[in-house]
Length: 118
Image (cartoon, rainbow, N blue to C red; front, side):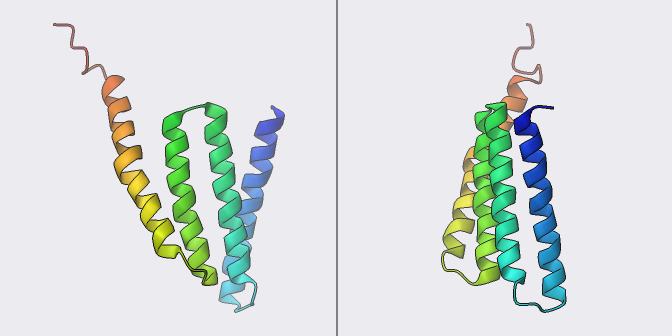
């Protein structure tokens, strides 16, 4: 296993642990729930972007950026930071108008329909 893969695994696990603890803190009404959730979302988004950069796929990179914006907006909403609407709108717009058409085009090109052989 390469060192980058180990690093992504460790930080991915850590982000899920932070998110799990944040929900426990939310249920038990501890004060640190929002902060744990923000750190968990940021760490998860960075792990997803690093994984996309490892694959060197522009489609995955674009989807990861859209997911980063959406996850950051959730984290900002949990803590009460401003800019939630801007981040959420940017993430959904990138996902809808950049990522989904690129995935559709990739699927069309690799399905065999593009070159019927007639």
